[in-house]
Length: 271
Image (cartoon, rainbow, N blue to C red; front, top):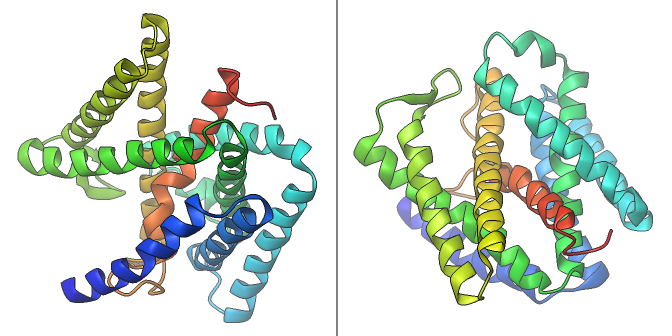
């Protein structure tokens, strides 16, 4: 399994890095769109669709939605606004699972939620790419999420006692969340000092990092909740040794739109 994971990572890493940082414009939007469309195919399974024809049809619907958003960029504020509302609601659903299960158990509701998870993630990345320091912004949100994951893993193993959401993901603890936050905040602090941020900018940056990291935790737990509902371990086996596409981007689906919204609120870019 370890060998398989390493081989898959060595193949995918240059493709992912090249797609994220070397492509621009329509090519970048298409590359991210392909990833999101694969995620949509997996999400259809989480929504209870077993037949391949139905899963492909749902992926096609999501691809059509991405094309519409590309053609009509003025929809971006509405899409990201919907994401903020959804991830706030998702936080409550995760914390109250399984009591909340009846609220989203229908296939139609879960398919709609898939749109709220996937479309804003694509929209957020496309916006970041067009803003000043676009590649650095994309790298920044990824580093925040990855650093939080690594910090949470080691902190949780060393100090984890209080379960974060035992009915959703028994292995995660509050101590792990705190450890991940500390690592991400330290990185934000180093970046802020190196770029000569004012005290006010530094405080806002640290607050923003907390929001992004906590959103990434919710994104991770949300996919876990849907997988638990369906009784499956991985969203698919598309990535040997790593599960599915959603298993790799679940945290980012929440963190990216929140990151974009925070930057927009700070007047970093113009929608």
